[in-house]
Length: 99
Image (cartoon, rainbow, N blue to C red; front, side):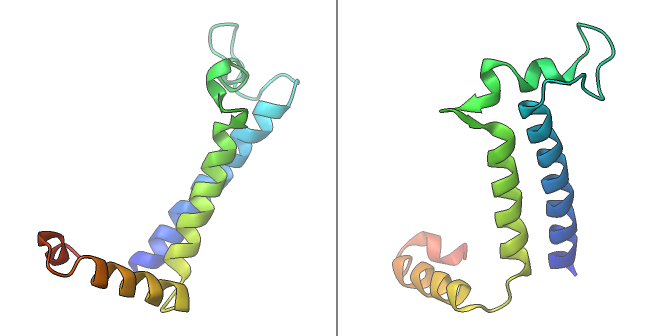
């Protein structure tokens, strides 16, 4: 049940980040434009909307997609391998009780 909720919330995040990415690359009047002080396009076109020439919204799309895939994956070989590595790396440490 919780996996389904995570996938649904991640899908909403993908849509939101994709819309922000569209605003980042467009030169049109944005749907959230109210006046020159209230405009989401100002933020999405500023120097703070990129990290190393990669749009923050693009990082958001990738991050939410990754979360959705992790939540949707059930007992895949990758997940089993990750659990094996985690269990064997943490043996003998206090962190093993947190996993």
